[in-house]
Image 1 (cartoon, rainbow, N blue to C red):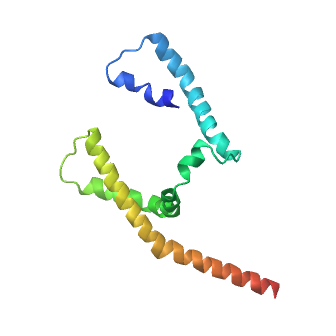
Image 2 (image 1 turned 180 degrees about the vertical axis):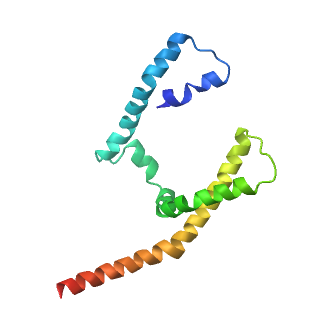
Image 3 (image 1 turned 120 degrees about the horizontal axis):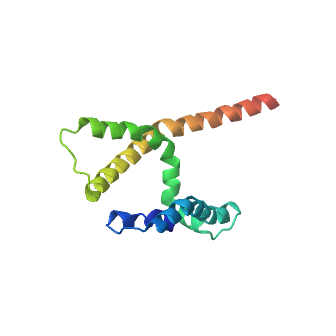
Amino acid sequence: MAFVTFIPRLLQVGYVWPQSLHSLYISLSKIIFIFGVICTVLPTTLGFKHSFLNLILTPKIFHFIARISFCTYLVHLMIVFQFVYTRTYDLYYNITDMFVVYMGILVISLFFGFLMTLIIEVPFSNLQKELMSYLKVSARG
């Protein structure tokens, strides 16, 4: 995966590839990427507790983000549109500026996703649990 991801950077910094290397990259990049994804995901799906993906995804911050991810998904496009359509100046697109903009939109999206989770998702989830338990009791009795 690193080959497919980082090797094209050489083209951006002025290194000129020979045609044979271009052909090799174009013909093998998708296969190497898929093989890398399989090597990363397969140990986790087979249940190995000490796999790379399991090590990355077990910290508590990812549990928090997973909990608020759907509401964040729903709200982030509105935040991006708000940012883009209310700007009154041109933005110079370099890496530093885009990182700051991205991180700002990320933090604002996570904040509003968290609020929506607390105000909407958690109460309705509790209501659903109560209704399901009531329906199970009434179906038995």
